[in-house]
Image (cartoon, rainbow, N blue to C red):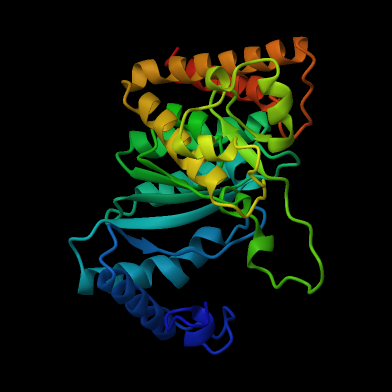
Length: 327
């Protein structure tokens, strides 16, 4: 970040709220807007600052440090380019109904905005989001924004992007490595030097709505022909060669995932919203049933590869649908 002239640490020579004056905030905003315009990005994005909990001064600080100076810089440079506001919302913010309503009232009142670039920060022990309340709160927040005619781009999301389709997001970003599919502050901290152990290589299976540890592949294909279970891409052919050396740094599992999951998302997204929720619930239910069938065949998955998240997604989706009359 210090390589960019609009980064607050560069503009203020050591960022702190007291040093970051209105003039410096505007200087940063102007440089950032110019950078985005020079690269012809589809949107101009107002950045944000990560906050813990649900601080009382959240909106005031965001307005002073980012929103107001960026609105001014945007109007001076590219008033015709769609403007998005980035929001990083943690679990506390999403689950606190009063706080999330304040955020909704705030952003829907900014007339210049075309939409929100939403980054949820949801704690997880396993690989998938499996907290019912977090999922339900996120669905409701996205749906409320869309009902107010704002675009919503969901960033840093993993396979939970699929149930989020029920809330009608405008777009979803797909990351490769795990740290690009879940927002975690550790990715922005200096790492301690020393040997580190990478994660096990995984393959995404659309029929299970899960990334499965590659060490299960042999057990699965001894029970089910691979073409009947694993998604068909040119990368699968390469990965299933006996000589293929699985490693989380190799590109084929991620290219396979992009091809498979993007197609899975687009197929459901093409459905009318009134039908999409039922389609998503049906796909989650079928995936959970398949895990049961595999267990009956003696294949027992570890918690990072199993389907424990699916009934929790279905529960959140059912409650979301009932609350808004979509079921």
